[in-house]
Image (tube, rainbow, N blue to C red):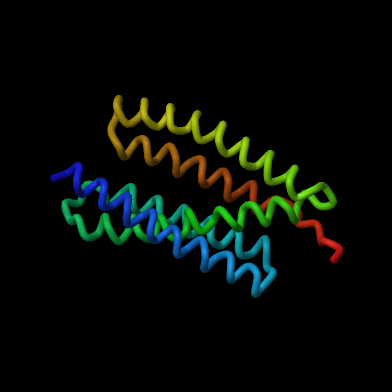
Length: 154
């Protein structure tokens, strides 16, 4: 039963993320508040990850589904915002260059974090692995907050 629930929670996360990605992108197009929107969604992703981490072992599967959905909504919703924010802060460099570098960095860090979290999870349990990710998300929030936004000339 746990494997089935894990798959369904993953599906919930992905579906909520699809909705979040679309809505966050639309919001950014409407408001043009690149740094504020990116930072807000990043913080909400972090909050979602913390809640998800500490509700996994409560024994109430519905809570895990809800927190997984929130996590998926904001974490995947952050993706289009991150790419747009990168374009804004690297102006006048080409969008392709900033997007390509960001994507490459995401893949490299994704591999490293997956390996590290896997080791932590197998040695110390899922909570420790997730706390590791929470710490790095918090570092990302700080770095995003400190990043200066260059105004694009349109």
